[in-house]
Length: 196
Image (cartoon, rainbow, N blue to C red; front, side, top):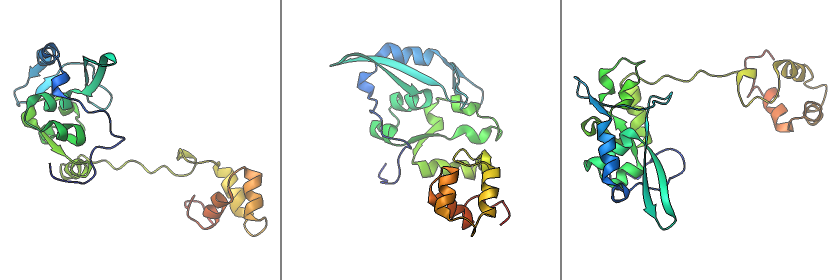
């Protein structure tokens, strides 16, 4: 993969190397696969609420025996030999078989068939999701429902009513928030759904 775009999300983790994976972990992995009529190789294991399944292996290094976790589909891409090891570590492993499932069906994420997997950037993953109609825009949380909210709706209404009566600095002190929080309310940058 010659791209220098955004790779996987989150901080880079320690890379996985095929040379560290003992053959019996690969055999145990293959023993848990159920081949479906549509060509998907469904990995049998504890499914997370995201639809993905984790796999693990142990290996010896200079610090002793280490336990490593990896998602099953990424493990499959790693051991398949179909993709460069560095790409599997640096980029997203995308499913190509999701187009054969209903939009609200995420069981395709259990598929570990290397022929149904591809490598891509975070952007590729999002664009693929949008192109297949799987992207669901998260609901916009307004007011108190927003996890970043430091004030209640009642407090904000009161702060709006006090505009030009009490200084923003004093309002911030009374409500125990920064002056910039009050400024953003008064400039209609936050809590926009409330009347001014």
